[in-house]
Length: 101
Length: 147
Image (tube, rainbow over all chains, first blue to last red; front, side, top):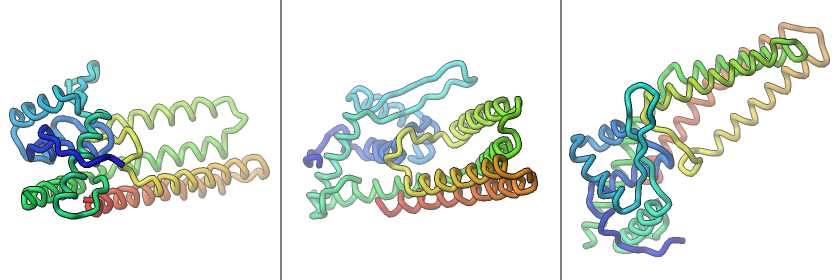
């Protein structure tokens, strides 16, 4: 089980939502799908994705040769660990069992 | 601090619920998958030992690849691992497929009948539509419940 650890990168609401989405899918999500679920502007999403990417929490892929180039977002192992620890910390604060979400 | 943590957990729940709302598979996906599986049953039941059997199986495999690609482009989501996916329903689908494929092969190997193969193919197509929708429903329910 992951030890609870508050993570400043994950803590920002939009980044927390991005991470929650990626953990829920446990796979790849296209930029447009992330934007639609979060209901944010492209520029806002790009900014938060860059922060998560720089932290090593997500991978960004742009497969070519399939028509329009789309950006696919995927969680890294470090990202999953950070998110799980952060959620455990949140649950600890509110007094719930710190199991992973 | 406690209020903020509650708000963050609520944000996670809201995001998962919004994802669940979005994960409605297009009507054509399960229908096409069912049709492909039905064709595979026909190939097994009518074609084992024939020269065209391998060709049909290759076409079905290619068709599945095209279908998966279309799903990814349309939905913008692809589950690369089974971590978040309802594995139980997928295992049930595998089991049902094995039984139906086996039944089709048995008809081919031990009888000279053709009509049962068509019946099994039709059952397979319908089963995959039903199982696909069931899998979707379980996944959406789990996304909301685990929040």
